[in-house]
View (cartoon, rainbow, N blue to C red):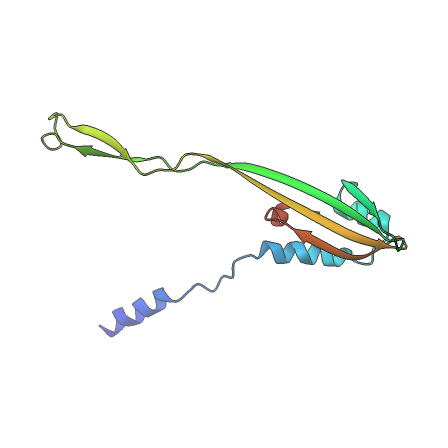
Length: 135
């Protein structure tokens, strides 16, 4: 009995593996780019920005956008038999129960860098798709 109880307690403990926090990884990647010259930032981001804004104080905002989408396949329905004479050829009606149709999931991400005198000084990002972007 004690062995079974000990095994039950051991199996009920959460695993030691920590889930990967992709947003923290993404934020750390961006943080490492701070202080880079503009050419280095463009190289690290992998492409030219989608938008550039000039501010009154002479600094600039460089903005990158990503839009990703995928299809969530959903789940097929289960079929349940109503009526009839049991499991044989006794008739009855098979009716779909539950299930979810496929859905299109769209995610976006915006990353903005503030450039002061040609150097990346700060960044801001938002969006659910940012953990999937690899700068």
